[in-house]
Amino acid sequence: MTLFVKICGLRTEQDVDTAVEAGADAIGFVFSDSPRRIDPATAARLAARVPESVVTVGVFRREPLEYVRSVAAESGIGAVQLHGPEDRDYYAELATGGWTLIRAAAFGDSVPRCGELGEDMLLLDAPVPGSGMAWDWSRKQVAGAGEKWLLAGGLTPENVREAVDVTRPWGVDVSSGVEASRGVKDPTLITAFVEAARAGAHAAG
Image 1: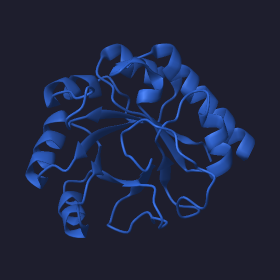
Image 2: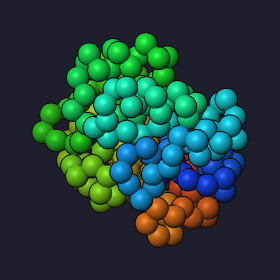
Image 3: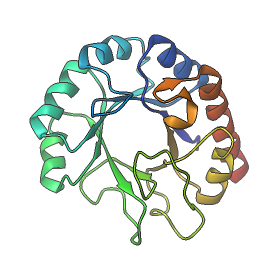
């Protein structure tokens, strides 16, 4: 099975076009407080450039349910990624909108399982989520085997192949690791990341 690759924090037409051309399976738009934040109207314009085969994801952090619903609808995204304390009821309410749901969880002592709160995919981030810092993927099992989970946190074109070899994730997610400066994507790094991630998946397979 081909490794699922998500490039997050995109803000420009060049970002989107590069990620799609490189072969990314999903692209992410950040709607929470971040240097990568964009407004729903801009996201809608960018999402319109994306082929149906590529998933468009809206990233939210500790936002009210109605805000997430409103922004997701206005931007036309296909998936919602949640970073926060949302419970099963929150996910159940959001599921009625037809979006694919992605739950972001920080790596810790317990092994999270995809679907625990009703999500479709699990994104496993570093112990300090959103820090862009690499962490020790090899310490123990990091997620349920055979589940739809994405490895995130500190990944770069230089280390993603090793990370895939070690953890055998269903997919990977990157944002700061493909940036020329904070919040500014580098087309060369995006392409290199996708190539390296897929090379790692091929070797692991």
